[in-house]
Image 1 (cartoon, rainbow, N blue to C red):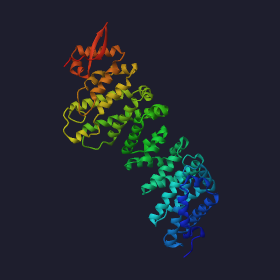
Image 2 (tube, helix red, strand yellow):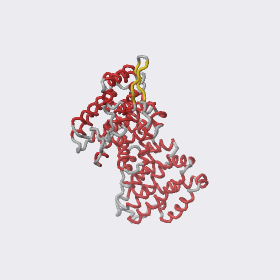
Image 3 (cartoon, helix red, strand yellow):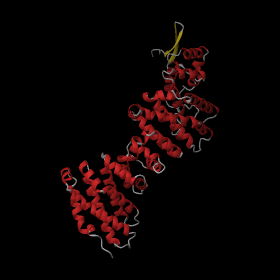
Image 4 (cartoon, one colour):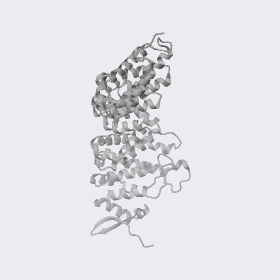
Length: 468
């Protein structure tokens, strides 16, 4: 049985453990001599040579030799990991000594091992922690690591069965990603990395780092979002849309930091909604079936509603040809479907079944009315389009209490006010409906609205209430 090189002597383990503890102290990190790091590099280089020869337990070094090698590797990476914590000096020194390329090579060797699972996992975790620390806040180290690890190593480790290995890899990826590198994910070799991150968002219960990678990096590249969307299944599309909804709901990204980026997202999502909105009618035709495409439409509408409530993006959506028409047509079709038969689009004032309460299409018509109202906010062209499409009576006819569409009355109030604000023709139309008794039958007063004529003009105002 061959002997390991002197660099991999078992007697070195105790000294490495002591060094690892010392490097937890900031002052010790700053004063560590280069020779100490060269000794660590010698251990890792020796481990690379040993593992290249050790294809199995019966290799030249045997089980005991492999055990010692992996212990030394793990402890060496603990030392290096600690040495880089908030220490730019050590980050630069270790990079210049060649630790990044050596570590990447060693990780590949460890990942390919078929034995010593627990020891190899420990070594793998520590090595990835080191790479995350050497790259943190250090552009030069990020460049070097990206060249060595993208895309093969990152994709391999992101697909590992150990959750901690995956988490540490996500940390490395997050640290390395910058606007220029995000675009590298558009390449055929890079797109699987982005797809895997989205998969982690869907698979993990608390996908901290994958969520941050998507919201802080991937969503800042509209071209990448389009490329991903084309590759995703319907379930994966829902995950992406939920992440986008979360990003918009947090506020700053859609309205302040990168309005042009989110303007591109808004245009793309509006196009997707227009292309696939008819799928939602399948929920009325076969309520018990799985309609994943319809669920995507529902989530698209959720995101569009959120974006239309963001001042920085409302103008983008208002200017998109066809979006308002599609929203009105979809509202009309779902409204008719709900009247023709009892289904999820039927007005329901007495929900009794749990399935009805949790149906994913609940609130769909409310959100359509919300989107229509937002698109008409201080926009004369869209107000006039609502008139031309005869959508005002449609909105009024959807204003009654409906447990399938919570807050539908409130959204209808907002929509009617936005449609009629400083628009005399639309105000006159509602006045005519009131004169005919149609607006009253459509529960105009239940919206808290009433018509008032002043000097030949028709005004829509809050209804007066009698003292109780």
